[in-house]
Image (cartoon, rainbow, N blue to C red; front, top):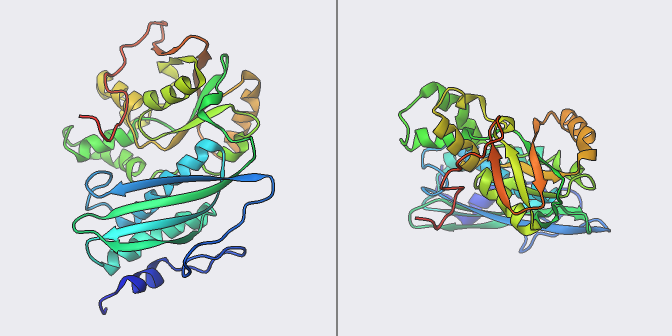
Length: 323
């Protein structure tokens, strides 16, 4: 294949016919409308080679994850996807890599009704850098927010916790390799699937929400701080991924409570909504677990089966600028 320039890359790998009502890839700006009575929800995420993903990761999975992490942010607001734009910086043009990457991205875009409608490509001297900006719409005044939790609310989590953290520990050799456990957990790290179809149906039923990207303790604490309240969580009720069964208790706690890259939803809702939420989860084939209660007093306590508070991990979650 002849060498591809910037415009060849866009046309070959990222151009798709824009959906009706959109002006997409190929013009200076993307154009789309938001329905009357709705407002725009916007989020941006950057993934950097060596920081957020390994150089040898399957590029199809990387394309998928590039969109998934941003879909997760829309979930936290209860917003429906509308479209996304991609800024991609590459050390070199590798057509095979680009074909796989774009295929993974376009597949999830089609599945989630979130078309790629614009972006930019450029050269980076040494690292693949991916910045994706996503747009969604949510009814005015109805978005789920971090500051709306109320004392007495149930606390819920979709999916399971700990798998991505365990996979990362094996891949970075912080744990002796266990090929069977890595096989069970690697897809959680490299190909997450946030509950993007489930989340908009929480509007009018849930109060506050956040996506679990940096660790359960840290992310739930953001809700509690913004809402000026606290929480009591049951360790026994936390939905631990099956691959963590049988590992050391300290590792279980670290992975479940502080492990990042989960991209599931944590939200609060009044007890009167329990039946609705469980039925909704069943309709969407989503695992949904009630794990605790919002309390008036500040602080986050995780208790064991006897009601005793656990000693929580010193590192409560991921921080790009921590030592």
